[in-house]
Image 1 (cartoon, rainbow, N blue to C red):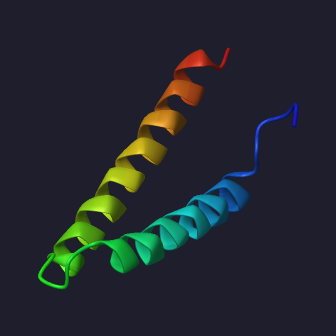
Image 2 (image 1 turned 180 degrees about the vertical axis):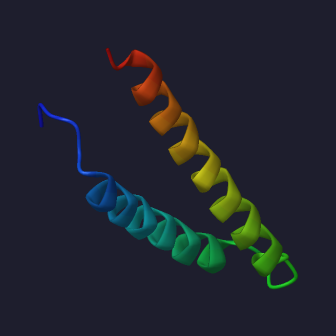
Length: 62
């Protein structure tokens, strides 16, 4: 892929990847693992990563 990905497509793709990761995480962690807390943290971390990527894109634009 050579161009910038449409923001809506990128967000959908990142949501899909996060969902797959969370599904795998739930399969591999002990039952006492705080899944909802981890899910909240991962969602926050993903949002932060998206915001940083968008900021980098804006800063590099002419």
